[in-house]
Length: 292
Ligand SMILES: [Zn+2]
Image (cartoon, rainbow, N blue to C red):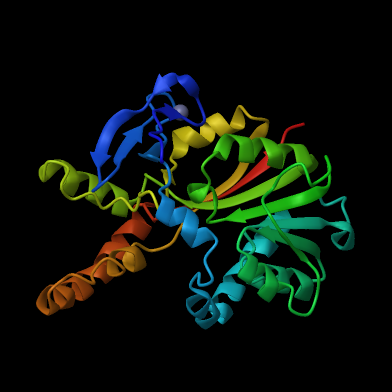
């Protein structure tokens, strides 16, 4: 049986989530202290099955391999510039959490960086390990020794994790002093989210389109939530808004009429441009430095 998630995972039982919106069989709640949004219950049984499933969309990932790797390369080089210049590149140890098919690790290897990954999907781990042993089946946990890594990448991950506070604390433990935690996640300060909010309120919470649900993104962060992360032993040293709203909106057009789809395709480039100019893109790319 799935349980309701009344309290904020970050702020604890002192703060009960306030109603924000509702879905077919879940509620979206908002923390009054850190503004974190979550689905209650957090995850449903379908999601648990999906994690252990034989199919996790690998064909989609493989078709995007080239583009993804280019993006990873840019991100890795950006982060390396933010790291302690006294540390030699060849001695830097990187952990990629939620490493999937291993594209990120491929890029690290091409860049001459020592890296390893972990993931909870067995099939993905097998694919990543097909000609080398570099990915562990499991989550970030006691397996890793304290002060092990220079940089941890957790891209598009934290929004899926039921216990994000525990996750951040584990990252803090296994990072070396001054080590970096790099995250990418959808954010509330986006044009996509703000438009969804207006639509939702106007329709009496019938247009829940935040991308928060019990079998995918169970959390949505915002600037104020990240301030709480800084209370967990990290300093924010870099942040950047990324990602156009196009994909997210287009992904939800399956049920639209043909005519509406055409109109949408005409409008979308303008929406994207507006998001860029107003710095209201979909996701945040954020680098946190362990302050220990
Ligand atoms: Zn909170």
